[in-house]
Structure formats: C-alpha cells, structure tokens
Image: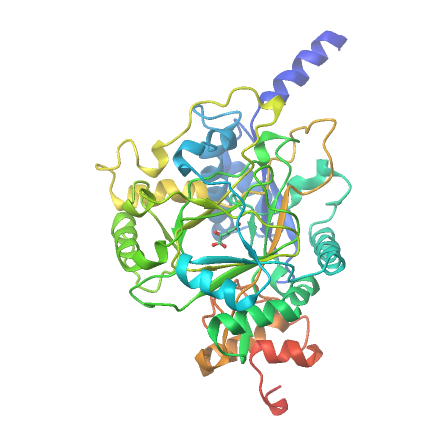
Length: 458
Ligand SMILES: O=C(O)CCC(=O)C(=O)O
C-alpha cells in the first residue's frame, strides 16, 4: 500500500467511534471487554462475544447486545460523535458554582456543627501523607490485578479502568480490597463518624472509589456534570438517617474536579425527594437514589458549593443534600471549542411533554457503565497521574443494624461484595459463586466494623 493511502485510512479509522464495555464473565469476577466499532451490528458483536466466553444463549446475547446498543446510542450517535463526553460538560447547567475555599475543620465538634447546619463538612487530615500514599498504592495494586493489563505508569491502558460515567466504581470487589479496609480503619475517620452520630458503636459501608482520569490526555475521560441527586428517599427515611463521605487521596481543586453540594438543601429534602420521584415516575419507595429534575426549585436561590479539599481530608455530607460531582473546570488547550451542550436528554427542552418513562430511558443511556474507548489515542505528553481519586466511606450506628442485614454483611467479605454507602441496608452487587475468603481472616477491628460483637458469631 502506498504510504499516503495508509495515512488516509489511519486518519479515517481514528474518527470512528469505538468503545469497550467490561463484563464480568464468571463467578470469579474475571473481566473481559466487549469491543465495538461504529457501523458494526450490535447483535453480531454480542453473539461473537458470548461465543468467545462460552455463553451461547439468549440471555447473554440480549444483555450484551442491549448494553452495546445503549452505549452506542450516546457514545456514537450523529449528534454528539466524536466527542460525546465533552458535549455533556456544560457548567452553565451545573449552576453558578462557588469555588471559594471551604473551611477545613481540625476540631471535630465544630465540623459536626457545620455539617448539621449546611449539610456538609470537611475534616482536615484524617490520613497522613504516608497513609494516603499507602492507600493509593494499594488501590493501584488492586486495579492492576483485577484489570490486567492495566498499568499505573501507562495511561494508554487506562481505558481498562471500569469506572462508570461519573467516575464511580462500586463493583469488581473493590469494596473488600485491602486499600478500602485501610480507609475504614483510620482513627480519625471513625472519630468523625462517631461524633456525627453521637455513638461510638459503629459499622461501616463496603463502598468503592471515584477516579477521574486526566481529561488533558483525552476529552473522552471527562465526566458529565449535571446529575444533582439525593441518596435518600423520604418515603422510607425521613430526617438525619444517612451520612456519606470520602477520604481524598488527591487534592480536590477547580482543576481536578470534585464534589459540588447545594448548601442547606437537606432541609428541603422531603419536597425534593417527592418532586424527583414524581418527575421520574419512581414507584418503589425503597429506591434511594433520586436524580433531581433539572429545574428543581432547590437548585435556584442557593449557590452550589464546590468542595475544595486536600489529600488526606475526610469530606462528609448528609444524603439529603442535593449533590453531584463535576470534572475539571479547566479546559485543556487541545480541546478546542466544545460543541453545544446536549441538554435534551434530561428533558429540559421538552421537559413538560416527556413522560417519566422517557426521562428514565434517556437517563439510563447516560448512566450505562463506561469503561472508555480503548482504541483511541491519548496525547503524547499525558502525565500518568489520576486527576482525582477519592475513597468512599460511610459509617452508621450498630444499633440500627437488623439481624437480616447483618447476616448478609457477614458473607460480604468472603463473597467479595461491594455496597452502596448504606451500612444498615444491603444494597450490594452479586456475590461470587464460591467464597474467596473467610470472615475469620478479618482483624478484630474489621470484624467490629462488619457488625460482629461476639467471637462466637464468626
Ligand atoms: O464524586 C463524589 O465526590 C460524589 C459522588 C456521589 O455523588 C455519591 O457518591 O453520591
């Protein structure tokens, strides 16, 4: 082939929309990647993939085929291709965010007062530099082992890090990784939660991480912004019932992106929760994740606050507070002009006409798991450093744990399960078919945090 022709074909290939979707293919949580390229038939891709893992059946074809179609719809459709993720980055829809520094409390009671008044607080230095470095290293150990050939020094492999669209990972056994257990053991983390609950007898969540890959290396690693939500449904819980948090493993700044909260919105939770349920047609009162309608009144009037914090800080927020995360406000020089924001999926343009099920369908498209595109290039000067990394952590009084949930928690460590932020509920991923550990391997403090109070319960 003549050289210029080869170049032309390479350039055309570069423009094609390609992506990978991670799939756990067995009960040992082995991850394989479905590879899709624009123009392929999603069902054929699914059939081939299922054959390659020995699952020649309708269930596999249907699940993989639908995941590919969903992802292709938003990743590769004509309107947003080839920079679909960028089109979701629109700060005007996030509101006029206040980026001024946030108070970082060293005094725990003062911080708790702030938490009660404003719905969030930052507690300085819950981990030392050495502790956060240790946790970061162990997280990378976990990522590299789980997602081979992912390599911490080679950002060209970072598409294999299967965080979801918002940068969140709540699967793959991360919640039982050594790194996450080290976060829960930190003395100051436990002290802050104890002060917040006015109860020292605590249990922990088995949550995961939020990781933002450097958007300067490629636009496709930008995460979207406008997903204000609350993590508690007033039909099941009312009042101060749930606390969420993270330990920052990198500084969270305007350049890295981070958490945004609507201060004081926890006081309006009952109304916000009901409005969100109606908007989305949520019928299950036990559904705890509620995305706010785009023009919810709670989003006007108060300036949303970006939570600046330093590596090692512990950030807590009340699950009733409207919050989201946002990517870097700094646009990489190589990005050029972003295409106009795509606001229609949320139902802004036709919000009044869209039915709850249409809204849900659109939102699901955006919520489908993203691993990245795998086949695209990244910039040559890409620095192998995560833009943002935080370890999610939550604790609640042991007294609120039911026997039924405790029974499930007892098996979560052995079964390698990750949960939501709720220690008193068991919102978890599927267990492994065969346990890979035994609860007897847990240290005394970890046993305590699971909920064991007597040795004979093991
Ligand atoms: O990335 C974050 O800081 C927040 C994630 C979030 O919104 C959540 O866990 O509910």
